[in-house]
Image (cartoon, rainbow, N blue to C red; front, side, top):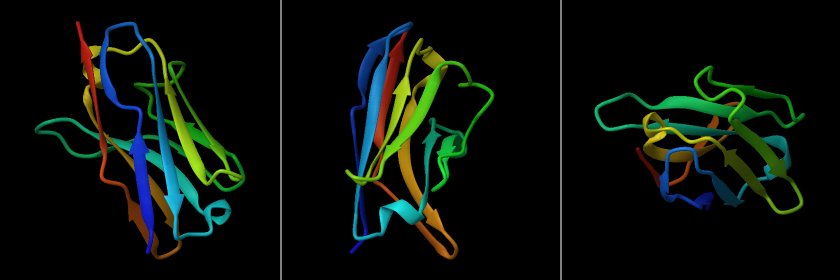
Length: 115
């Protein structure tokens, strides 16, 4: 059974930082591309950052220079370091694992940034 378990969300003031973690089980972690998505109320889910199995990263324009995605294959974990947070970053953040026809999601973790 595949499980992606996010942690690290919470309430933070604008300008602050949070580090999200996503622990994966039930998959061969190292061969999956991993990503973080977010969904704000009334909006569609959007890609925040992605890291391939070859450690190639890409980011949404809105988070470039502020967020950093990384992975630790030995721990089956992907991270999202979020700095200089803004109120518009408020959303539920979801972890994603993707390979071919396989596309897995976590339950999400709430990030709230107060102004």
